[in-house]
Image (tube, rainbow, N blue to C red; front, side, top):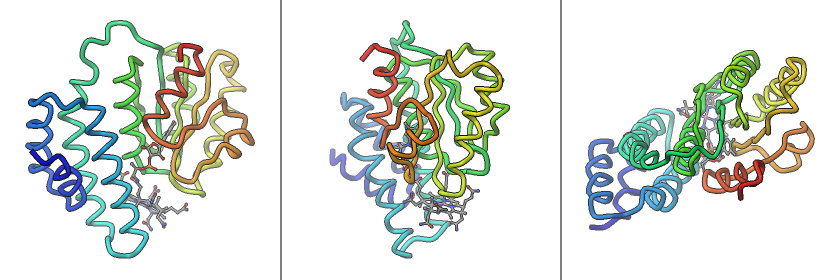
Length: 211
Ligand code: B12
C-alpha cells in the first residue's frame, strides 16, 4: 500500500478514507509512531501552511483536523498497549483562551506511547484547572500548549498559580506550540521546551532523568 496516501487524505480531510488506510497500515505492521511522525504531523503542517497562504480557510482546516483525529482514534489504543509501567504522570492542556488542540493531541498520544500516564485537560484550560489537577494526580510534569502569541502569557500565569499553590517545586513544566521558543521558555521560568511531538517525549524523559 502507498502510505503517502495517508498524508494526502489528511490534507484533503477524507476522514473515512484515512481511518481505513491507517487500519490497513497497522494491520500490515507499520508502527503507529511512524504513521504519526511521517504522515500525520507533516500533513497538518501542510494544512497550516496552506491556511497561511490563503489557499485553505477555516472549514478546510476543520475537515482536515477531523481526518487527523480519525487516525489518532485508531492509533491511540495501540500506542498505550503493553505499557504497564508509567514513566510519569503528565497533566496536559492548551492554555486559557486558546482552542487549538491538534498539536497537543499529538503530543498526548506520543507521550502515552512513550509510557507516560497523561491526563489531558483539553483546550482553553485556566490556571486553576491546571493547579487542581496537578495536586489531584501528583503530576510529575505539566505540559502546556499555546498556538497564539496572544495566549502565550497564560503559560506564565499558570506557572505563577502553581507557585502560589506551593506546587511548583514538585513538578516539571514543559511548554510547546508553534509560536514558542526556548528563549520564551527560559523567560517564563519553564523547565523545558520541545518543538514537536516526538521531541516532547524525549524532553519529558530528560526532565525526569529517565532519558
Ligand atoms: C488549525 C488551526 C486552527 C483550527 C484549530 C482546530 C483545532 N481543533 O486545533 C481553528 C480553525 C479552530 C482555528 C481557530 C483560530 N485560529 Co488558528 N490556526 C490553525 C493553524 C492553521 C494550524 C495549527 C495546527 O493545528 N497545526 C498543526 C499541529 C500539528 O502543529 P502544532 O499545533 O504547532 O503542534 C506541534 C508543535 O507545536 C508541538 N506542540 C504543540 N503543543 C505542544 C505542547 C507541548 C507541551 C510540547 C512540548 C509541544 C507541543 O508538537 C505538535 C506536534 O508536532 C495555525 C497556523 C499554524 N501554522 O500554526 C493557525 C493559527 C494558530 N490560528 C490563528 C488564529 C488567529 C485563529 C483564530 C483567532 C481565528 C482565525 N483568524 O483563524 C481562532 C482562535 C480561536 C481561539 N481562541 O483559540 C493564528 C494565531 C496568530 C497569533 N496571534 O499568534 C495562526 C498562527 C494563523 C495565522 N497565521 O493567522 N485555528
